[in-house]
Length: 109
Image (cartoon, rainbow, N blue to C red; front, side):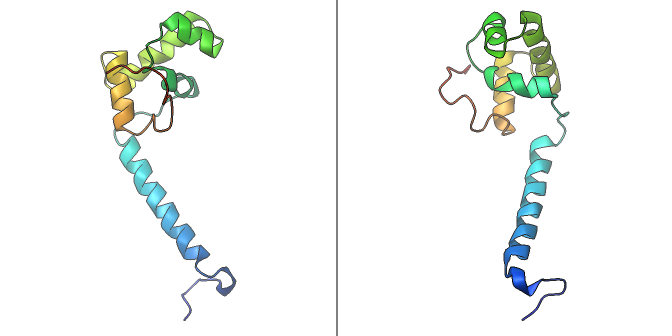
């Protein structure tokens, strides 16, 4: 049996790739719906946001100044609609932005 546009040399790989692309597109849509994109500096800081670290400690981890650590944290809170670092961390978890990150860090509850 042949499918239109299918390459018989690829077997089921073409169909599996199409299904995977569709699944990833759906997941991207649910994670980012209504949430502004995070900038590179914000994404770099995000895994440290839920830890019980001061901005000075976060800055030391990232090898930046305290203000350079604080600015993206404030921006993350604004973009996620959270009034605190703890709430921003919770919202990031809900959105799947922290999956696989910071498993051994003490988290805000």
